[in-house]
Length: 113
Length: 112
Image (tube, rainbow over all chains, first blue to last red; front, side, top):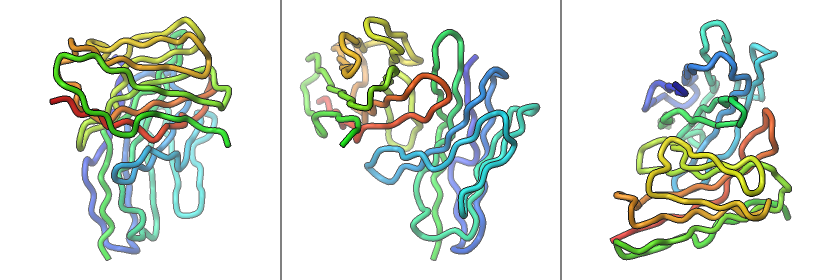
């Protein structure tokens, strides 16, 4: 069925280190994969997205990689800062006549100063 | 200033009462979505709509109802049949195709 698995559920890193969050999806027809950051009590905000015609996309300290064969995509944050502490969600679109956005269960990232 | 407006921000109801959460967007988006978020959990899809007067059930539609009479509006009713309605509810919208969801600020519903 339609599913997005996300790991790990929590991640603690030292300031300046890198953080990696991984997601897998089940529908090979999915072709759009956004990542969202949610701070406590606030709405999720898009931080980066990738479409299936590319394998990697970078935006300053954030990058996303996509392996369509393995149905994996990952978020990479380099040189982490305390303000990166938040919950991160991956998502995939399932297309079957309609566009159904399914989210992973989230990763709580703590950057330790 | 374009965006998605959810109201109210906080809502308190007694058990057994139906309650309607408002979601309005002025982004001219075709598609609108409702998600439920429980503490420490992800976003679970309740209902979504791609066009006016049509909508689809998501993964946890039981105990909820929606309508899409106007492109700009997608209200969610939490009925008394929803067994555990206390949660944070997020509305989102997007253009059709491979585009990101834009979220409202959410409504925190507490039922006692």
